[in-house]
Image 1 (cartoon, rainbow, N blue to C red):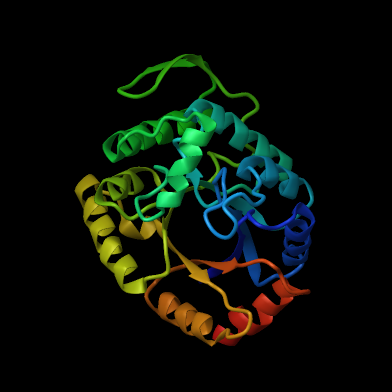
Image 2: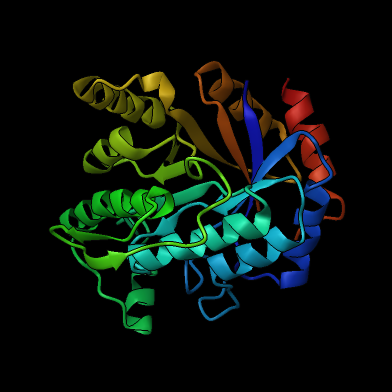
Amino acid sequence: MTRFGIATAPQQVGYGDILRVWREADTVPQIEHAWLFDHLMPIAGDPDGPIFEGWTLLSALAAQTERLRLGVLVTSNRFRPPAMLAKIAATVDVVSGGRLDFGIGAGSRPGLPIARREYEAYGLPFHDSAYAVGSLAEACTVIRRLWTEARPFDFDGSYLHLTGAFCNPKPVQRPHPPIVIGGRSTATLRVVAEHADVWNFPGSDLEDALSRGAVLDQFCAEIGRDPAAITRSLFLPVSYDDPGPTREAIAKATAAGFGHLVLSLAPPYPEHVAHWVGRELIDASA
């Protein structure tokens, strides 16, 4: 069964507009999940326009919704120390009453060169891709341990070094919130095979997604994990004026086995857009 969600990139838009869409989506049963993204400066539109920090906004939206599962698609592991991120995510899971889907990835990909500027602008290091993926694997290990271990622990990895690491309170969800890893590189897919409950392909190219999914299947086989244990997720753009291509993309993705579809909504959001998504996209594609 395919689970449908929406994404509202928190750039070039006001808080009230995003809140309106999420509150409405919370009442539309066809929409099961909702997502923000993780950038500190706009990656589309006015480069100096408004943009909200993803986890702060997610916590506010979690407090004002009741049913939707929610998350950041996906968090950049380059932005926050992983132990701090685990603490932030546990807080959001508590605020939401156990509705967090924890999205994480290695960080800005080469296809988004404009995103590089946010690292210099915020004084953040931008390591090479090998470092980014290696540290992502360690981050997933540490975050899961912080969410599940009852006693403080030390961790001495290649990238992370922690002494007396501990998270209290724990997330509401047991054993922990589902881990959603985004990415398509071969190195990232190895991390997905080991750590992810959901794999999100960063884009809407179904053929490429299927090709990368076959690589993921191979990595799962190598470590003895059932590939079917990892839900496949696809990100699909929405046109309010011409919903036909999105309906076709939904049908193809569903037939190809993608059980988690995220429908990307661009601002300005029409009135009653969540009900429109449920009626004109989800129901019309059934």
